[in-house]
Length: 248
Ligand SMILES: [Zn+2]
Image 1 (cartoon, rainbow, N blue to C red):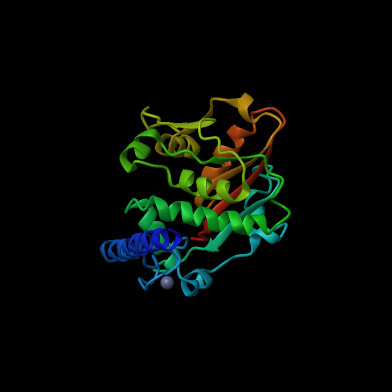
Image 2 (cartoon, rainbow, N blue to C red; image 1 turned 45 degrees about the vertical axis):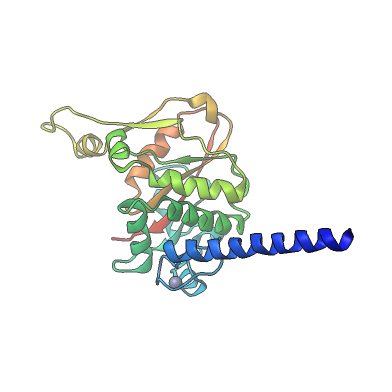
């Protein structure tokens, strides 16, 4: 009896596992799991970049250092507790290629993956482990509708997975301005083009340490405008993290 059931069960199991292997193989042929950077085969399903590509990304290590160039950007403009940008952004580089894949090719999974990489780096630093919640820098509503997603939100999803913190996406919005541009100051014209931030749920973030996230920081003007609006909520601390730092 034992012999018989073993005889029946084992071939079934091996056929199942054979089909499973075949299925994975066929799936791999149809949708090859390759590195998003160099296109070579990546065997580990959990990764989207090979070790060579991920280690070649130009890390700033700003997360470890107080008074880093990102924090200096906000001195006298916006009271931030800590700020960092993970990689230097240069033209024709791998990080530019990856950001292009996310923003213009709609590779959302890659956006979340890059967010996880940010989460792992932030977790290395005791300066960022005390945040309570993560807020993505909102996109203009029409822009988000056109793109179908907000890349900052994808990064937040990845960070949240690693840091195990909530993401608040409905705390602040970005409204369009449609008034005429004439007779406006430079800042008003900028607001007109970029939209103006509006805190709509201040009670959600009251008393919390918020990590504001965007894909890239250049002059810091957008993050400053958004941060100023977030700081209207009672008793909050504000820190900032971006994927890239572009000095031009
Ligand atoms: Zn690669």
